[in-house]
Amino acid sequence: MEKINELIQKELNQRIESVISVGGGCIGSSYKIITKKEKYFLKRYYQKGGSICEARGLEEIRNTNKINTPEVVWFDDNYLLLKYIEQGSFKKSFWELFGNQLAQLHKVTNENFGFSQNNFIGSTPQNNLPPNNNWKTFYWQNRILYQIKLAERNNLSTAELINLINRVEKNLDKIIPDKCKPSLIHGDLWSGNFLCDNSGNPVLIDPAVSYSHREAELGMTMLFGGFDDYFYSAYNETFPLEKSWRERNDFYKLYHILNHLNLFGLGYYSHAVEILKKYA
Image (cartoon, rainbow, N blue to C red; front, side, top):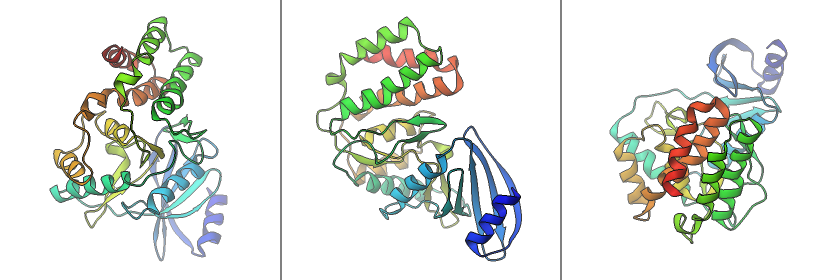
């Protein structure tokens, strides 16, 4: 850390007074950096380039002025330095504001599905290229089949899984609506990837951004039980969803279940099979 501390001090033109480890996860380690003037949040990535991907994702969201993210101060191939976010308490007004602001973010569109670069979903590479104007093709090839190929390489695939994948592929036209517009999504939106700041505002962190069907975002929010009901009500009031959106919810969870299968092993296999059987 001595070398990186020197680099940060030079970049900030501020003397670092203390460095406090705040843990991390499967993607790296994190530190609270305190200077005389300000507090910062430093992330060290295990995968080279992960810091660049996150910095660009945060900036893509921040530049919309629709919802807050931590301000990117500096980054290189392995480190990302952010302004520190002081956290506050969750209230009803937070969930309503969060639903509204996420809906506003999803109104930001692009010509194609994908993103300007590949990035990561957790520690797994996320394939955003090449861009595609057909969501069915993009989601199936760049999301589902990409994870299936990883599962094969990780010896986690079975004949049962491949048979179900082939059956579901034949039903894609029945599952996914014809007219899906690319929306800017966070991409990995669960309870661990947002904060409430000390003013009660939502703050998105740890994105896996892409321009995707916005229902895919909502699928991820429901993977571990879902958010507060006020969140979904406010979202739907701001940017109404199709009445059939919940019918596709598990289908969009599938990408993340397969990713968890590849990251954490066979404990997620039966859930993946259950979802595939539903749409086969």
